Picture 1 (tube, rainbow, N blue to C red):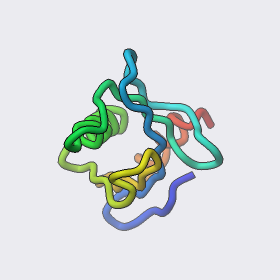
Picture 2: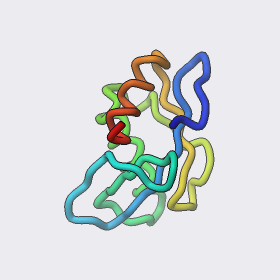
Picture 3: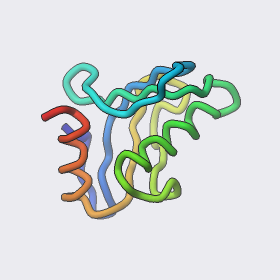
Picture 4: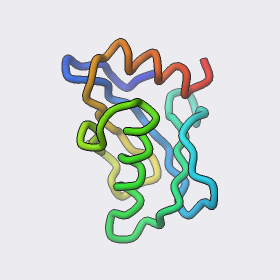
Length: 98
């Protein structure tokens, strides 16, 4: 489930795989992290930008509404997605296959 719900959106945990041939968003890693696979490599922030773009598409928000707030240099990251928290929580449950 989410790391926390705030007044401005939803804070979630994600687990990232980089350099894949088939990018995707969805599935569960551990108990609460969303799996994200991106084609970009972790060089000069390219993978982080790809993660933000992929999450924006998966949650139906603009890329500017997604920000990595912790773990920028790690495969496990905390991400803040701006928007209506309840709608984002419903989409998160779908992505986690709940």
